[in-house]
Image 1 (cartoon, rainbow, N blue to C red):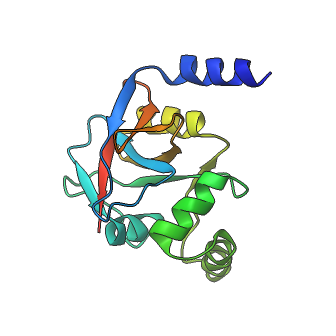
Image 2: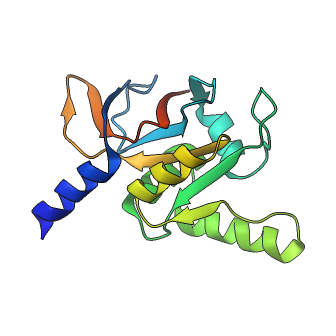
Length: 157
C-alpha cells in the first residue's frame, strides 16, 4: 500500500523541481508554492505570515491572494505554522475562531494533502500554499514533485 501511495503521489504531482534553501539555511519539510503565472519569486517569512493570517489581501500586481492550508492534523502544517507563523497550529486555530466570531475574517481554505494543495494552487491565479518535501534532501536542495501550473517561491528571512 505504501509503495502505491508514493507512486500515486508522483503520478498526480508530475514534474520534478528543485527548491532552493531558505536564507537562514534551515532544512524545511515544506516548500512554498504559487500559481505559475504569479510573478512573485520570493517571499519573506513575515510576508507569508501576513498572507496566511489574511493581513495582506492582494499581490503586488493587484490579484487577490488565496492562501490554502493543509489539514489541521498534517505534520506539514505543523512545521509551516512553527516556522512561518511562529505559533503552533492550536494557537492559529484559536486566532481564526476569534476572527470568525467577531465577523472579521475566515481562515484560508484547507486541503487534505500536498497533492490537493498543489492542484488548488495550479487552478487559481492568486493562490499560495505549501507542500511537503517528498524526497530526501539532495545537495542541500529539496526535491519536490509539482504539477506544471505551479512554481516554488524562495522563502527568505
